[in-house]
Structure formats: C-alpha cells, structure tokens
Length: 151
Image (tube, rainbow, N blue to C red; front, side, top):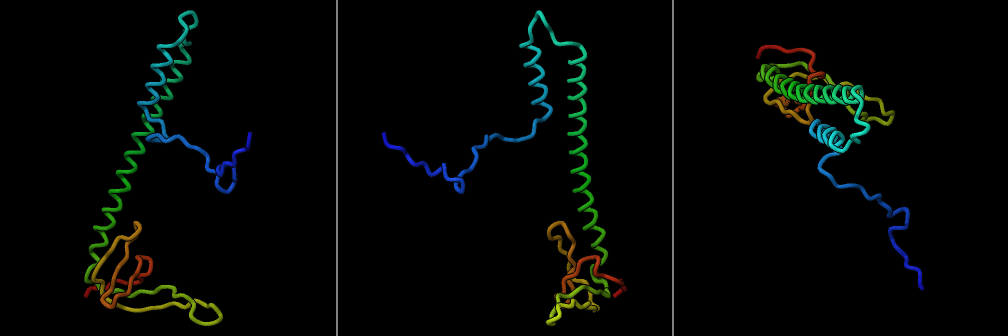
C-alpha cells in the first residue's frame, strides 16, 4: 500500500481546526442552561449539596452583574465620545495658536517644532480622536493647541 502525502502535514501549512460557534464567551443564559441540565441529570441518591448550589447561584449572580456593568460602561464610553464632540464644537470659528512636533528633515534626524496660527473651520473624529482642521488645511489634535482666541 502506498503512502499518501497530505499537504496539511507540513508545519507551515498547518492550521489548527477551531470550532465555529457564535461566541466564545458564555453568557448568563448559557450558565443557567448548564445549571438546569446539571440539576435535571443529578443522581437522586446523591443530590447536589446545598453549598454547591448556593456557590453556583452566587457565580451566576456575579456574572449577571458583570454583564450589566459592562453594558453600562459601553454606553458611558459612547456618551463620553458624543459629549467630547459636542464640547469641541465650540472651537469652530476660533483662532488658535498651535505647535506640533515635525518629522526630522535634516540628516541628523533632529525633529523640529512647527508653530502657527489659524482659524478652525472643521472638526473630524478619526480613530476615536478629534482632529481640528484649519483654513489652510493644517490638521491638529487637541494637544497641539496652546491658545484659543475669539475670531
């Protein structure tokens, strides 16, 4: 009988087989299903101890609280991002003095500091960060602004 060469045996081509399920994280419903299955299939001559049941219920309760806290934190972060955009809205039309670190242009690779003035005409959110755009097209982050003046 001849040996069959399988390309999956080569280490460079090997990819471990993974389960394809909806989520890798067990939720509170999954935990409750496991607990109910455990209760239904327990040995009638040796039922689950009260302390085991109480411990599992405490785990279930803390899991539910952590899930709720996570949802609340996600809503809070989203609100903070929206609030930040609204607070940056007051910079529109203002004259600003700015400074930022410029990439090195000389052979010594010494960075320089660019400075300037300009009026903010637009604000973008890019990668969850605010970017101010001046009339001349200069793009600044909030940390680059050193002074704000009325126009």
